[in-house]
Length: 364
Ligand SMILES: NC(=O)c1ccc[n+]([C@@H]2O[C@H](COP(=O)([O-])OP(=O)(O)OC[C@H]3O[C@@H](n4cnc5c(N)ncnc54)[C@H](O)[C@@H]3O)[C@@H](O)[C@H]2O)c1
Ligand SMILES: O=C(O)C(=O)C[C@@H](O)[C@H](O)[C@H](O)COP(=O)(O)O
Ligand SMILES: [Zn+2]
Image (tube, rainbow, N blue to C red):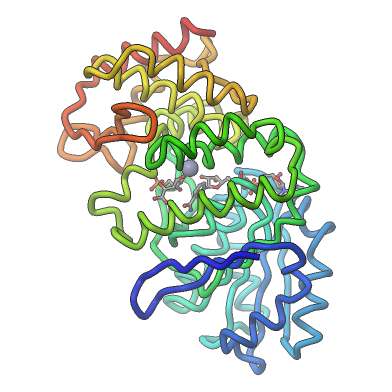
């Protein structure tokens, strides 16, 4: 088992990664001084809860905690205002007070939704992340929480750091193959933005990662979490450096929104977006081999690398203008210089992005 720390002064917190941690949740709650007098609300989804909720509630109850649960529909559509309202209703009806916590048991959807409920309920209560997807090695760390608007991803949200992240890698064994690949997209992203050796390691170990071989998977998750933790520790609120974690997301988020949430998984959409970013990089001076290399890394993880022709370019461009990085008339892009190295550019003309979108369609 490994433990990493997200260094944020008096809001620092651990990420515990290992096997069998779900059964020890009560011990970790006690170690973090969670209240035994106030109720704690677990948010999970309809796929994850039948598999893992009992293990969690048993462990917490055994350690003397009062727990309630609220189960949402699986998938991106649950990151909505209406489901958020249902979660808040469950918190009020369950009698949560300022010593309570909200606990996310699931992937990034549950984590973002539960985290936003924790950030806003009574102006903020404690929050615990218990991730159960590969993708959530990214989403459970860093405190970005929120929900979608039909017009734009993650448009309503907050920064609200968890108390701790308890990552039981045994839970990953039940993930469907498509979700495994989508999660590995964010793992590879951490290599693409920070560490070329790690990006190439992901490709070399692609078969083991896809087969969920525990030791390889745990190493990859720890490495991804460590990169994310380092970035977040330096720039919690995305005033600068943190934007690099958004590689591929400007195009990716627009794809998710215009195709209808859930049509493309988040990891699939950002996979296509990362190829687009490489194309942009080449237009701005990177070696032309960057596009093929990026594509090959993503394809080894069985990820999509082209944009379906039926997605309308104008609609996609319009959706990109809703990105949080679109400010004062121009869009900030994370542009790769080479594998493992990116820069943040604030001067990317929309015409260049349009060319990239067209090129992404040609490759289909
Ligand atoms: N906050 C952040 O920093 C951050 C970072 C990256 C992504 N995200 C967000 O995360 C979301 C995507 O997260 P995700 O890919 O985990 O999606 P998800 O939460 O929808 O989970 C994927 C699917 O797997 C199922 N599932 C979860 N755990 C399972 C398990 N152990 N076994 C079997 N099935 C399981 C879920 O029910 C769902 O159907 C997106 O909304 C994205 O925007 C947030
Ligand atoms: O933590 C971050 O910062 C990220 O950008 C991580 C991304 O993988 C993630 O998808 C995040 O939710 C995107 O945030 P947004 O602010 O661009 O909506
Ligand atoms: Zn992401």
